[in-house]
Image (cartoon, rainbow, N blue to C red; front, side, top):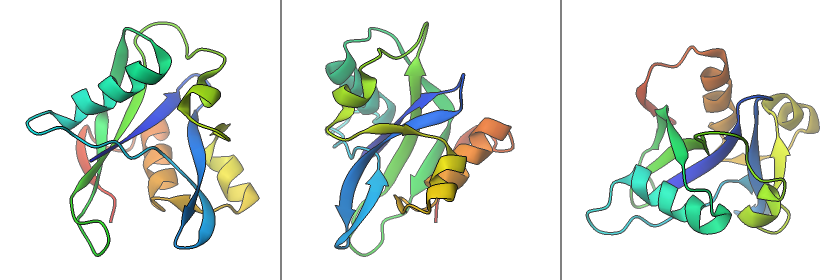
Length: 140
């Protein structure tokens, strides 16, 4: 499975959806199944294009990897996506899902909200600040 993160690099924010995780409210990103033989980046682009209608999406070279553990029986990839040119449509939160909203990592920390995966804010800080190498990064 792949978990696409819709990012807005110009203002260092990303879209999250309100969800229930282990009987508690938290904020998360979509979980998208990957078809047999389909690369996970292609699955993320396919999913986001179907929601937004944008023809060109760029996947960042940093990819988070969530190992298979307990309830998560398969490895999941967290990819960061943005439009190739221009910006997301104004209604991007509504396109992603009901209640979706833009967050910065500072806003998440200040509000004390729970995020799933819980390492997502750290991945985003590393990406924004440029201290993560390109390629796969473990999110254990």
